[in-house]
Image (cartoon, rainbow, N blue to C red; front, side):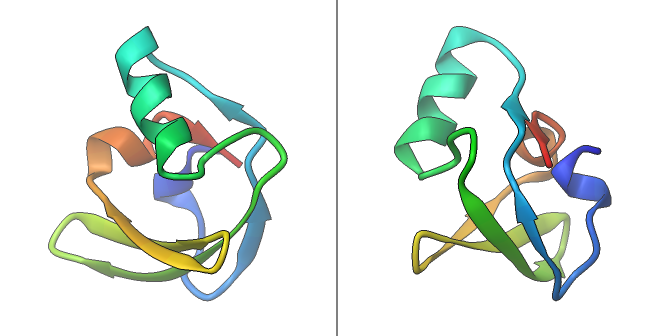
Length: 69
């Protein structure tokens, strides 16, 4: 399922990154790689705050739809 549909407070594993080359590269730089463990911290104003590799990262709804967990 896309990250945007994931429940707040739960942990997930990144299964796939969809989208173009630039979007994939940007997400990989933020730590969203296949097999990475992530936790949905909160959602605020269309943004999703995610814990990935002990860092908190805020991503917009468009990017969150490209991350499959």
